Image 1 (cartoon, rainbow, N blue to C red):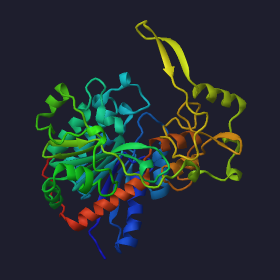
Image 2 (image 1 turned 30 degrees about the horizontal axis):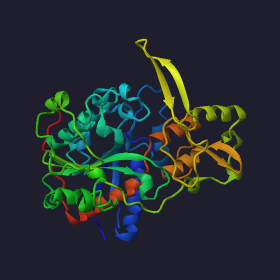
Image 3 (image 1 turned 90 degrees about the vertical axis):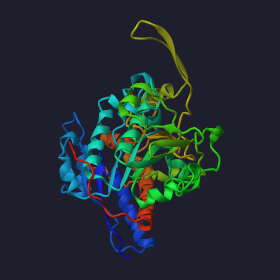
Image 4 (image 1 turned 180 degrees about the vertical axis):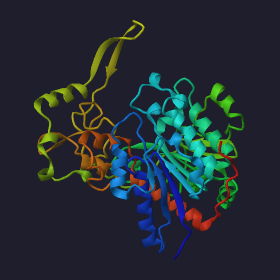
Length: 431
């Protein structure tokens, strides 16, 4: 059965996580929906790592997909009107999140005005020029509370930007481990759709609570319990974002919960509780011992360093203002459990760092290998073998769990199949 094709723009493409996920969705749709053509087609991608002479992620992407549909260039320099001619129906991207990352202290956050936070405005320009039917973005879950000094302001501004571009929005913080993947990786996914679409009419016919808990874009696929966690829900007193963006930026803070829905600038949200699928443990991604290079095993010196890093500690420190204080950390288990999903990978994975996974197999302690880290995110083995180990770990710490994108892509197919909307001419003029 032939279906209309969704042209996709992939922003901040990294090593191609969104593309891998959407292509897996294509494969599933061929089998389950008997589609005769690829539903999703990446027509253009962008990947640029500022300040680096080597562009490892871009090189990895090109090694798999060639260089005809991807630009290795600062997105601020891209001709947005050129993108309009590609007639995209979907814009995707895991936009840079360093300003909100768990790897930074709360006092170190810069929020949407930070060096990389401002790249959201480039997303805005792409959307103004192309006016896609759908948007699918991903970021760290701390985005909902950024910055520390004005909780929720950044996300409120982003929602208001999408409101002004005539989109309604759903979001959900998804822990991949809750839904059968081998990593406890929490990320916020943001799905937006045009307000003059038949799908908007359908969703607007539902009570907000039904959207969040049962029938919305995320709730159908990633099921949750019927009641919010500790009654954290704002259905009766929704957040009103129907005001100028400058006012939001300068004055307001907001409490956004893990699941949310914005209709015409009014925001409903709740702290939803996942209904878990069968757990997939860290052991499921491990390579056979015979395949592990000796360089991944800990030396005695490395073992001692990790014992210290993962142990409990209290250290007296002095702040930049001369104030003395006690820095304390609780103890971690000396090695990561093989019976649970892995912890969230950070870009420092594989280094001498408290957050690095350390496993013990047959009485020997070692790092995870780059292949095992690729498996934690659902990539094929050796997806990043064009680069050195340090960058392989770094790229996997930045990547997403690709099979989540496959699942979300299948939901977009169902929307397009049930509530089709012809591509509209852009109503906005890029400036």
